[in-house]
Image 1 (tube, rainbow, N blue to C red):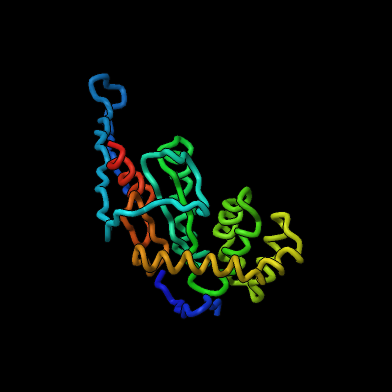
Image 2 (spheres, one colour):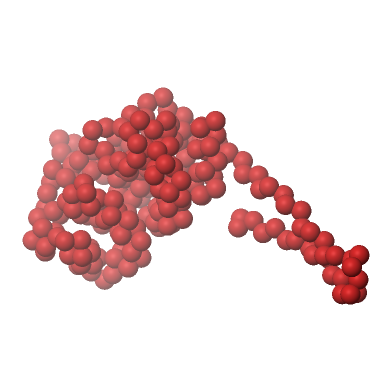
Length: 233
């Protein structure tokens, strides 16, 4: 998703395959014949080329205030920059992230970091809400905001829709209102976005960093798996 939100930082930050394999099975014209049997389809292993990154950076350290999942000592660090209102980011979380979690995070192969890169005010509000929920609920909120993205972003009153999600997560209306007024949280998120732009030249979402290798636009499950396996060899 192209970066459509430009803001000015001054003394303060303003918030302003499916690959189908067809097997041809021979038909026996004489069912009673013992010498004639259906032909067996030959298995051809699928080749998935390892995608090339569009840039490589030597520094990809995880910060103390990052929201992370997985083994701190994992050999691979994955950093995702996403906007909660970005449809491609939601698709990435629907298709690729479940594989990442099951095959690589839970098995200790990667440390996974999520960083906010809000492209508009509504995305910023969603990011603030996830942080206000607390570290224990953070990723649960990120997940629900992506899975229900089409609902709350297209609601005539999107902030009211966000408030309903907040209540389902245990926050009161007072908590929600106070959260969106918290300038410190907003500034932290916007600084994270600015740092992503400066350090890794990120200008679109989702952008995935894998041990310093930048993949703008995200990766399919098969592409992600091929990159990780190439680094684990």
